[in-house]
Image 1 (cartoon, rainbow, N blue to C red):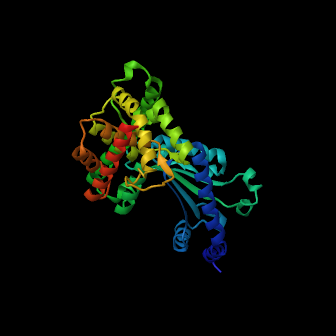
Image 2: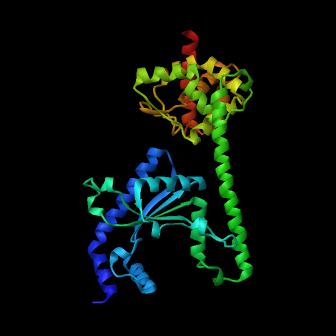
Image 3: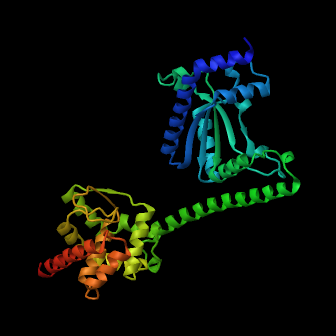
Length: 370
């Protein structure tokens, strides 16, 4: 039997073991990155298929046994930002035994006049500490290739692969220049996204440090300002304490879409600044509590009238404060309330909205006679 046939036979025998190994490494990396607070675009595992393995053996003509191939199991980690590539790389260095001879940071190996993006490539094994655990013992001696790159680097690599041109000599010089220009643009974009993230982090700290200062009151409401307010405003905390205590509600963190919806609702009332928002909340929060008690719990995520919903996002106080403003401010009548509901996609039809307006007006009468 030939060397290739022996290797392929060994591959067939150990196929399931390598598959389980790749899946295990994928889960391990995902768990570690979650603990470290690093959010990735994608983490995937794969197993080199039999045909690819056979082709590599023929091409390289240097492999004697299956263990000589270090990329049978593979993991790809795609980060959102280029600086997270280095953070993930540091974690891989810490958590695995590294095969230095077969690992390479291809970013450092890229010539200045070359086009294209490259990944950080590690070949790893389970470290000795993990091999003491029963779940990892079967993987002793197995190696796995881990590729780490940013989402823009990945986009480049995928498009380059689709075009089928991986080397400079494969395409004409004038087209090569197009590749070079595009690579430069993507590199700039990668760095700009990284810079934007850093600026947002600095802005979040600025908001956190200054949210209660008078000099900050003219700040325009955005998702970061709103996120800080819903976590610190005394009136909102009072509302939250009331619904959690009396209704067994679970409050969950709002998504960016939730914040956008609340901001649009506030804009309908011409509430644009932090000062306006604080005054709006203060004058409406008690009536907002009255309304939620009168209506029951409403699913504000889907913006429909569903009673007894047990999970609400933490901007629910603002949602009901808007209702309070609608029914206590004399500037708003039936048609204005209808316009508000329709403008903010609350309710599935005008008929449903009319019924809800009637409920709100009934609650208004109860507030006035309370």
